[in-house]
Length: 184
Image 1 (spheres, rainbow, N blue to C red):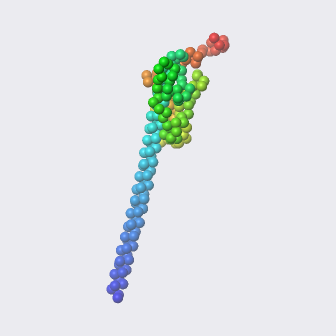
Image 2 (cartoon, rainbow, N blue to C red):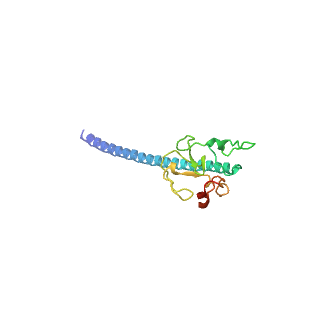
Protein backbone atom coordinates (compact mmCIF):
# COMPACT_ATOMS: atom_id res chain seq x y z
CA UNK A 1 0.00 0.00 0.00
CA UNK A 2 2.84 2.36 0.61
CA UNK A 3 4.00 2.60 -2.99
CA UNK A 4 0.51 3.36 -4.06
CA UNK A 5 0.27 6.37 -1.72
CA UNK A 6 3.39 7.94 -3.19
CA UNK A 7 1.97 7.76 -6.70
CA UNK A 8 -1.26 9.41 -5.52
CA UNK A 9 0.73 12.32 -4.11
CA UNK A 10 2.59 12.68 -7.40
CA UNK A 11 -0.73 12.62 -9.28
CA UNK A 12 -2.17 15.28 -6.99
CA UNK A 13 0.85 17.50 -7.53
CA UNK A 14 0.54 17.12 -11.31
CA UNK A 15 -3.15 18.02 -11.17
CA UNK A 16 -2.29 21.14 -9.15
CA UNK A 17 0.10 22.35 -11.87
CA UNK A 18 -2.48 21.64 -14.55
CA UNK A 19 -5.06 23.62 -12.58
CA UNK A 20 -2.65 26.57 -12.24
CA UNK A 21 -1.85 26.37 -15.94
CA UNK A 22 -5.54 26.46 -16.82
CA UNK A 23 -6.10 29.47 -14.50
CA UNK A 24 -3.20 31.26 -16.17
CA UNK A 25 -4.61 30.47 -19.61
CA UNK A 26 -8.08 31.78 -18.63
CA UNK A 27 -6.55 35.00 -17.22
CA UNK A 28 -4.47 35.51 -20.35
CA UNK A 29 -7.50 34.95 -22.59
CA UNK A 30 -9.58 37.42 -20.53
CA UNK A 31 -6.86 40.07 -20.82
CA UNK A 32 -6.61 39.55 -24.58
CA UNK A 33 -10.39 39.81 -24.99
CA UNK A 34 -10.46 43.00 -22.90
CA UNK A 35 -7.76 44.54 -25.10
CA UNK A 36 -9.63 43.46 -28.22
CA UNK A 37 -12.87 44.96 -26.88
CA UNK A 38 -11.09 48.27 -26.21
CA UNK A 39 -9.65 48.27 -29.73
CA UNK A 40 -13.12 47.63 -31.20
CA UNK A 41 -14.61 50.45 -29.11
CA UNK A 42 -11.91 52.86 -30.29
CA UNK A 43 -12.40 51.79 -33.91
CA UNK A 44 -16.17 52.31 -33.62
CA UNK A 45 -15.58 55.76 -32.07
CA UNK A 46 -13.25 56.75 -34.90
CA UNK A 47 -15.80 55.57 -37.47
CA UNK A 48 -18.52 57.68 -35.84
CA UNK A 49 -16.21 60.70 -35.89
CA UNK A 50 -15.47 60.16 -39.61
CA UNK A 51 -19.21 59.90 -40.27
CA UNK A 52 -19.83 63.08 -38.28
CA UNK A 53 -17.21 64.90 -40.35
CA UNK A 54 -18.59 63.61 -43.65
CA UNK A 55 -22.28 64.18 -42.88
CA UNK A 56 -21.67 67.61 -41.35
CA UNK A 57 -19.57 68.51 -44.38
CA UNK A 58 -22.33 67.38 -46.73
CA UNK A 59 -24.85 69.59 -44.91
CA UNK A 60 -22.43 72.54 -44.95
CA UNK A 61 -21.83 72.08 -48.70
CA UNK A 62 -25.60 71.96 -49.21
CA UNK A 63 -25.98 75.23 -47.28
CA UNK A 64 -23.28 76.79 -49.48
CA UNK A 65 -25.01 75.46 -52.61
CA UNK A 66 -28.35 76.88 -51.44
CA UNK A 67 -26.79 80.29 -50.81
CA UNK A 68 -24.97 80.22 -54.15
CA UNK A 69 -28.25 79.40 -55.96
CA UNK A 70 -29.96 82.40 -54.32
CA UNK A 71 -30.55 85.21 -56.76
CA UNK A 72 -32.99 87.51 -55.00
CA UNK A 73 -31.35 88.39 -52.64
CA UNK A 74 -27.98 86.77 -53.37
CA UNK A 75 -26.31 84.69 -50.67
CA UNK A 76 -29.52 83.91 -48.80
CA UNK A 77 -29.22 81.03 -46.33
CA UNK A 78 -31.95 78.40 -45.69
CA UNK A 79 -34.50 78.57 -42.88
CA UNK A 80 -34.58 74.80 -42.19
CA UNK A 81 -33.00 71.54 -43.30
CA UNK A 82 -36.14 70.92 -45.37
CA UNK A 83 -35.14 73.88 -47.56
CA UNK A 84 -31.96 71.97 -48.42
CA UNK A 85 -33.88 68.81 -49.30
CA UNK A 86 -36.26 70.58 -51.70
CA UNK A 87 -35.51 74.14 -52.80
CA UNK A 88 -38.71 75.48 -54.35
CA UNK A 89 -37.52 79.06 -54.91
CA UNK A 90 -37.10 78.66 -58.65
CA UNK A 91 -39.18 77.26 -61.49
CA UNK A 92 -37.66 73.82 -61.00
CA UNK A 93 -37.18 72.35 -57.55
CA UNK A 94 -33.54 71.73 -56.62
CA UNK A 95 -32.11 69.22 -54.18
CA UNK A 96 -29.03 70.60 -52.42
CA UNK A 97 -29.03 67.70 -49.96
CA UNK A 98 -29.95 64.15 -50.98
CA UNK A 99 -31.48 63.17 -47.66
CA UNK A 100 -31.72 64.28 -44.04
CA UNK A 101 -28.56 62.78 -42.60
CA UNK A 102 -28.72 61.50 -39.04
CA UNK A 103 -26.15 62.52 -36.47
CA UNK A 104 -23.96 59.42 -35.96
CA UNK A 105 -23.77 60.02 -32.20
CA UNK A 106 -27.47 60.67 -31.47
CA UNK A 107 -28.79 58.49 -34.34
CA UNK A 108 -31.40 61.18 -35.08
CA UNK A 109 -31.52 63.96 -37.70
CA UNK A 110 -31.39 66.49 -34.84
CA UNK A 111 -28.61 68.80 -35.98
CA UNK A 112 -28.40 72.15 -34.22
CA UNK A 113 -28.89 74.96 -36.74
CA UNK A 114 -26.44 77.81 -36.09
CA UNK A 115 -28.23 81.08 -36.90
CA UNK A 116 -26.57 83.58 -39.19
CA UNK A 117 -26.20 86.96 -37.45
CA UNK A 118 -26.70 88.87 -40.70
CA UNK A 119 -29.84 86.95 -41.71
CA UNK A 120 -32.27 86.49 -38.81
CA UNK A 121 -34.31 83.29 -39.03
CA UNK A 122 -31.76 81.63 -41.30
CA UNK A 123 -28.77 79.41 -40.56
CA UNK A 124 -25.30 79.19 -42.09
CA UNK A 125 -23.83 76.27 -40.12
CA UNK A 126 -24.77 73.15 -38.15
CA UNK A 127 -23.31 71.17 -35.28
CA UNK A 128 -24.13 67.98 -33.44
CA UNK A 129 -26.43 67.89 -30.43
CA UNK A 130 -24.25 65.21 -28.79
CA UNK A 131 -21.91 66.01 -25.89
CA UNK A 132 -19.82 62.92 -26.72
CA UNK A 133 -16.08 63.46 -26.21
CA UNK A 134 -14.09 63.18 -29.46
CA UNK A 135 -10.84 61.29 -29.95
CA UNK A 136 -9.75 63.65 -32.74
CA UNK A 137 -9.87 67.15 -31.30
CA UNK A 138 -8.20 69.08 -34.13
CA UNK A 139 -10.54 70.31 -36.86
CA UNK A 140 -9.75 70.89 -40.52
CA UNK A 141 -9.51 74.65 -39.95
CA UNK A 142 -6.92 74.15 -37.19
CA UNK A 143 -9.27 74.85 -34.28
CA UNK A 144 -10.02 72.40 -31.53
CA UNK A 145 -13.28 70.73 -30.58
CA UNK A 146 -13.29 68.42 -27.59
CA UNK A 147 -16.95 67.43 -27.90
CA UNK A 148 -19.09 66.58 -30.90
CA UNK A 149 -21.31 69.60 -30.16
CA UNK A 150 -18.29 71.92 -30.49
CA UNK A 151 -17.51 70.76 -34.05
CA UNK A 152 -19.25 73.36 -36.26
CA UNK A 153 -19.78 72.75 -39.98
CA UNK A 154 -20.02 76.16 -41.64
CA UNK A 155 -21.11 76.90 -45.21
CA UNK A 156 -18.25 79.37 -45.62
CA UNK A 157 -15.69 76.68 -44.76
CA UNK A 158 -17.21 74.17 -47.20
CA UNK A 159 -18.03 76.41 -50.19
CA UNK A 160 -17.26 74.53 -53.41
CA UNK A 161 -14.98 77.22 -54.82
CA UNK A 162 -13.36 77.91 -51.47
CA UNK A 163 -14.62 81.49 -51.41
CA UNK A 164 -16.95 82.64 -48.65
CA UNK A 165 -20.60 83.18 -49.56
CA UNK A 166 -21.18 86.83 -50.59
CA UNK A 167 -23.26 88.81 -48.08
CA UNK A 168 -26.65 90.17 -49.06
CA UNK A 169 -27.08 93.89 -49.58
CA UNK A 170 -29.11 94.09 -46.37
CA UNK A 171 -26.49 92.22 -44.36
CA UNK A 172 -23.43 93.97 -45.81
CA UNK A 173 -21.47 95.72 -43.07
CA UNK A 174 -21.99 99.45 -43.12
CA UNK A 175 -19.18 101.89 -42.55
CA UNK A 176 -19.04 103.83 -39.31
CA UNK A 177 -20.02 107.04 -41.12
CA UNK A 178 -23.13 105.55 -42.71
CA UNK A 179 -24.07 103.80 -39.47
CA UNK A 180 -24.07 107.09 -37.58
CA UNK A 181 -26.30 108.73 -40.19
CA UNK A 182 -29.04 106.21 -39.59
CA UNK A 183 -30.84 104.05 -42.11
CA UNK A 184 -30.30 104.95 -45.72
